[in-house]
Image (tube, rainbow, N blue to C red):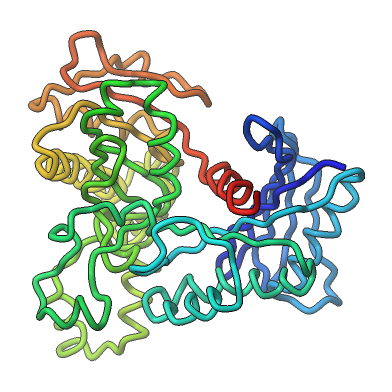
Length: 396
């Protein structure tokens, strides 16, 4: 009987999953999919390993809506597809690991309690990461589960780089420090970089994880040296609907003069800002590129400008850099943004082949010219394989 690894990435309104076969060399992806709108109008979509859509259906209207029903549906669907196999481990993406969890961990009741204690650090994400752990513990009793943390990769940052200029006790007692996120994506890039570009892997690399949520990190010898996100996933670059870095005085102004409460400010910064807020049109980069509205172009230009500024800042944290890597949805697919960012970094010796940059491919590829002082790469990320590998390793 084949051992199967189920990978779960749960949010407040969606659950993404992938199913892997635990092969000897490396886990092999068999199926992937997601359920969106789990508390409103749940829709289930699944694809095979070749990316062919093999399911697209609404969940029964007479069933309760929520994580429980959605996970039931996923397990039942997978059961029909995996005769001769059994789920031997489950890996979960967990946004926050605090200061304690610097690597994946086998889930126990004690670990769950420790994760629940971290909810104040990520109240919009952590509860929805924990819920499937509890539900699957009941649906598949005895199947080991492993938590993989978005913050773990960044624990190698120097202590100085993790601090804020706040009173000492805020960091030591309250846990207010720079954690960084998207760590599973950066861990994947670090795992493949030695084969693709040994010089960059041993040296200094700036990685730009650009998508609806965006961040950048400085990798020195494939370990995190600095990152743009901080205490929350709101910091750093502007994103689809998130503001990115903002003067704290703006928040005080919203409170004191615009009379906005905490919930209104949270909604503003997380859901109404970023590309959507600046453009007034969309959070989707494709729609912004297609628009003739000046505000759409301004939003795109601001996004590229902030990336180039952060790239230079991260290079300074490493005292130089050897490579620039683009990854995630925008990073992998948007040649316009890549070209604009690299144009702004020409003074650092970045030079790309525009024809190579414009080509689409699902494979890692180098787009810098032979004369470029900085190697520029597009490397598709794969957070799920990192979770599957961690699950196999931790239950072996």
